[in-house]
Length: 143
Picture 1: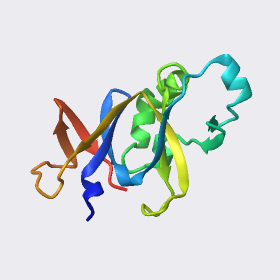
Picture 2: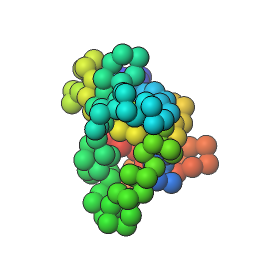
Picture 3: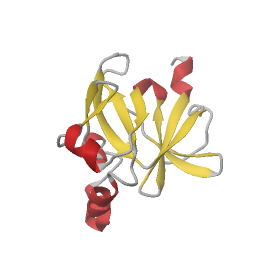
C-alpha cells in the first residue's frame, strides 16, 4: 500500500457523501452547462474539457456495487436527469480499470467535490465502509 492510497476525494451525490481513492481518479473538473455549451460541446454522454473528450456514465452503471438500482426506483433516475445540467456541475473521471494506469476511463457527474483528505482504513474502526470526516459520514468506494 502506498502513501497515496490513504488519500481520498470526497464528493456529494443526491445528498449522500462518498469517498474515492485518489489513486483511482484520472481528472476532476467543473463544467457549468449552458444551452450553448450543450449544443456545441455535449453529445449524449460526452463532454469536452480543455480540448479532450470525456465519456460519462450514470453512477449506477459505472459503480453498481455502490449505487444500486433501488436508488433509481426511489426517484434517483428522474432526479439525476433534472439535476445533470443545473446542479451537478462537477465531473469525476476515473482511471482505466487498472489503478496504476495513466489512461482515462469513464466519468460521472456529481453535485459537489470535497478536497482530498486522509483516511487510514487499516487503523479505522468504521463498519460497512462508512467513515466520518469533517462532521460528515462518507461511504468509501474501493475500486
